[in-house]
Amino acid sequence: MYEGVLTKMQTEFTSPINYFLVFEKDFIHMNQLLDKNIKISFVKYECLNCHLDKEIYRQGFCKTCFYEVPQAADWILKPELSKAHLDEEDRDLAFEKKMQLQPHIVYLALSSDVKVGVTRKSQVPTRWIDQGANQAIEVVEVPNRYLAGITEVALKEHMTDKTNWRKMLTNEVLDANLIAEKDRLDDFLPEEVKEYYLENNQKLYDLNYPVLEYPQKVKSLNLKKTPEYEGILKGIKGQYLIFEDQTVFNVRSYEGFVVRIEIN
Image 1 (tube, rainbow, N blue to C red):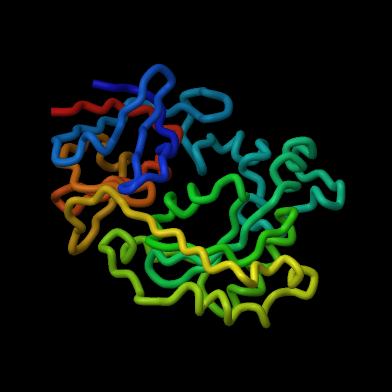
Image 2 (cartoon, rainbow, N blue to C red):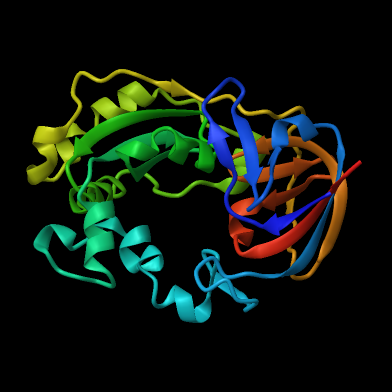
């Protein structure tokens, strides 16, 4: 039996990908739990910032912390709003400079359809694993988050920037050539980003997940409505646990929830 506050699963880029659920004093190698019966019980909340037992609002934070901490500022989800390169503070300039003023990758990923996205270079390939992408390719490498953001805004006029999580989990993935998709985007890049286009890059990242059986349909486990759930683990993809009865559990959506996990 294990107990701790949920944070997103840590991963190793192997084939298949290794997943670890990390608690303060322990961890679980989730791949070893495939085909085993797991019981998940909600215990209480623990905000990832103030660590108080306050209802989680978003991204693992209570409502107060969500509107105060730099880790939940708007530029996290909308990189085009980044201002550290202008020496302008949003919530914490030192934190924002550290996170924004480093190399960023604009990429294409194939998890359901072809989607465009942004990540820090240091998060390659972790970002793609978290999204459940089967393949990915880098399109541009820029020196800050703002340039990555305006590139994403320009490119999503020509393709989606969202993952269809249901298709990702049922493995309904479009048959697409990411190299060809990347090559056609050169004309759509903002002028200030064109010099960073990775013209000769044809490196495809292939990602293989520990899934024994994909569901036909998916139903999401909501820990607030169902504080206890028990099922046989059949796979892990993205940040989802996939169970035999078609239930899926998005670990990342429940960051800040303290759970008890029993393995039979």
